[in-house]
Length: 369
Ligand SMILES: *Cc1c(COP(=O)(O)O)cnc(C)c1O
Image (cartoon, rainbow, N blue to C red):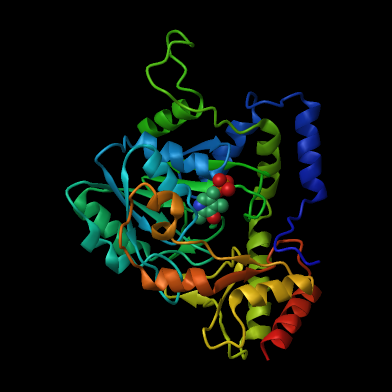
């Protein structure tokens, strides 16, 4: 079986974790977490980093730290993981959705302005699958209307937009270090910002909003969303080889494209746009409606032949959990609906060998011919 994601943990990383254990730092106390926060913030040109338990927790804290709540609206793409919408709904605010772009699969920035109302407080921008969102027009809008930007860069470690790092654009920007991200701590995440006051709010929310004068007297409710030293040690040791990781991901993407580009039934991810070169967080594909079998059938065939795949995200306006709450009644986003129905991705983990890419491509070609 070629799994859809197999991470690669090097000897240096195992040694870094062993050294952490050796020194006895196993909770979030000690020097490892601050070291990781500083190094990661520096990597994306930010002043502050707040390490947390996962990328979803990072988004929840970001939404809360900005004071978003009842009566507020937050604009975001319909096609993404549920985490950004869940964070907004949980704090009593309303997600306002925009459709995707057909070519990049990212949110269509041109649709944002039409969704702004007097209640709009923020835009959550999510860079999906490997290409950055077109940030300049989005940042212009945010500045013109006085909106905060939460940048979900969970899939974008090492990616840039017009030469500037993803994760450097948001009022608050977030990353995930889940096992299938370019940098992984198993589970983990971080919020980065240049704003000292927001940094303080995020730190407090991460750590149960313990009181300043009396530790156990709370002015607010937070979460225990702390990252452990063991996780920080693992992440820290990977930062050194991020360049190498991104090169490998681009090579995986390039090889797949080379091998698949003449298959009529497939739409492949663009290698680049005017503003960014694909880093292929995963190698996604769109199966054309004219193909000889459905996506479900194709994915089942591939699984039977030992090739793991995953479907694309499912749009927020089509989520039963939100529909039951009366959200997004009658809304339609045709591009996102098509991507969700026809899109899936191939094995793209860092442990994947070139030979396995050839195998996957050969199986796919056979099934689609
Ligand atoms: C992975 C991911 C997340 C969530 O991260 P977790 O660490 O799994 O909670 C959020 N947003 C995007 C775009 C992701 O890809």
